[in-house]
Amino acid sequence: MSSATVLLFSLMCSAMVGCLVEATPLPPEELQDGALNYLKRFGYLKEGNEHDQVSLEDSIRAMQTFAGLNETGVLDEATLAMMETPRCSMPDMDSSEGRAKRFAIVSKWKKFILDYKIFNYPTNVLNLVPKDIDRIIALAWSIWSDKAKKLSFPISSSQTPTISIRFVGGDHGDNYPFDGPGKVLAHAFYPQNGNAHFDDSETWSDGQKNGKNLAWVASHEFGHALGLGHSTVSTALMYPYYTGYKEIVLDNDDINGILSIYPN
Image: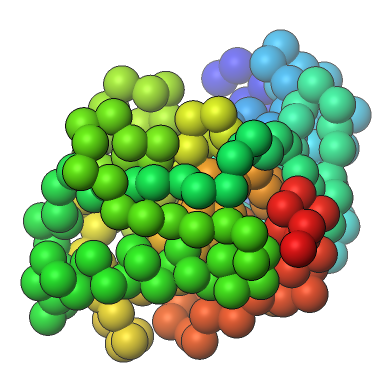
């Protein structure tokens, strides 16, 4: 067992009464490797700091703060459960700066007309046909343009639109691999890229609790495509965790963020 694994295991044990009795049924080393990878992937832990207990505790606290959990600095049950929650695959923080904000501006487009094209359609859906996907994607863009009124999103017939939308699976060549059903759902890149990828192994739906709500996930990802990072506000659309089917309403945090980039 590596020194990093031992350190993280000790942090998990300190969160429990009777660690050997109440610990998760996963093998400890597998559990700790998963937690380490999570903290690194989402920007909480710098590569190489996994052997430092202070850095590990600080990274766990940062993740807990971002998610709205109690700041214990240990891998308690609530923290481990949140690490298993479906979410966006874009990082929450810049690990080189250790920053967490409410709305976070990453970059912006130098134009207001952003054309897009859907290059393929999802394999697994619940009562959806391609026309439904077209409608949902258009709705997701309108969530933002309804507030930032200079923005518009025409459909492109070009093979090189400003923003490409694809349903892909596994390692698809952009250093943000998907992991099968659950956990990571989608990602979109910041300007001047903006391309959006959705995990094709997920079952996508609309207006129901079953499956993953494509309208909600797409609206979140398009926030990234417009230049917004993740928010610590749990009611914000740009909160990184998928909390199930609900009405899509921009929080004031989302509105302040998008208008700070594209003022009316």
